Image (cartoon, rainbow, N blue to C red; front, top):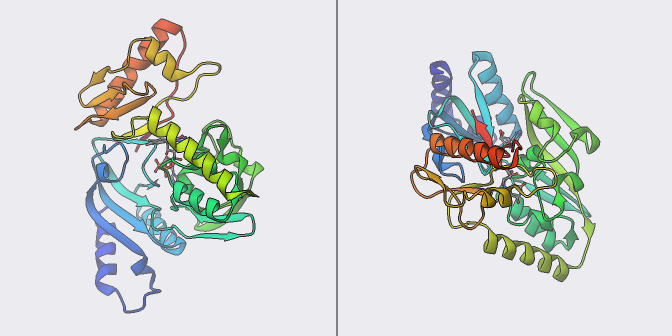
Length: 312
Ligand SMILES: Cc1cc2nc3c(=O)[nH]c(=O)nc-3n(C[C@H](O)[C@H](O)[C@H](O)COP(=O)(O)OP(=O)(O)OC[C@H]3O[C@@H](n4cnc5c(N)ncnc54)[C@H](O)[C@@H]3O)c2cc1C
């Protein structure tokens, strides 16, 4: 790690006046608390936190990590992760600096760090339909492809026609067709390839009527505001749906609404959410999840699975 920090510091000192210099395209901080970069507001410090503003900079940084055998991980908007209290002895690479979006005819091309909700608004403004479901999902486009994010009968699977990733094993870029994503419920091929970083995606939408698109988006947002505890930090629904059952309803029926461990609490408003009522730790959330799973198994005889991703 020391050698990477030295390398970063040398880069900083060597910065030239040329704005196209790759070294200008990485912003970094030492010992950065990950609680600042996750919607749960939980997580210890990463030795290095780096925001890459170009794909070349991303390739350069991951190559330096590879040569030095320094662990790294990718964070989008940090809205589906539970980050360890111990932090990370490596580099957390944020995609939020890669946020370029272009719209040509019915295709929206997004860089991985573009905010999903912001992109859904751009699609609406271009009178394109198909992305209304994404309005209010607080992730990045890369995170949404990775997770096959979805809501209200829509999912990324329906609109992603292509994505491009950086294979950090050799620094090459590759493009996947829609079928090659192997999308499933909150699943994509990316979940089994931790060395691949999604850098961009093409979303294919259809022409629509702007007022109707707006009405659908407003409806979805109103449902979120009325049903979800958006006033507290969280990572959204903690558990996956169990086939044929509503997990939140089972948690409610098991009498777990309001159950808490430290600062982590099962939301009174939506039992599928765990909220951070203040000072919650990863350990608190982990223990609360354990208790919920145990109770659901006792009462309903089934094992529920987490949607939330524990990192590192
Ligand atoms: C209030 C709230 C409501 C939510 N509602 C919904 C909902 O309705 N539907 C839904 O599906 N989800 C929902 N979520 C969860 C979350 O917003 C989505 O899963 C979102 O897609 C995660 O994107 P992210 O950028 O925040 O990913 P992160 O949380 O940053 O990362 C999630 C995983 O993706 C990986 N990853 C991220 N970007 C990349 C990349 N470019 N390349 C490779 N790997 C990458 C990370 O390494 C990590 O393993 C909600 C969350 C909150 C807080």
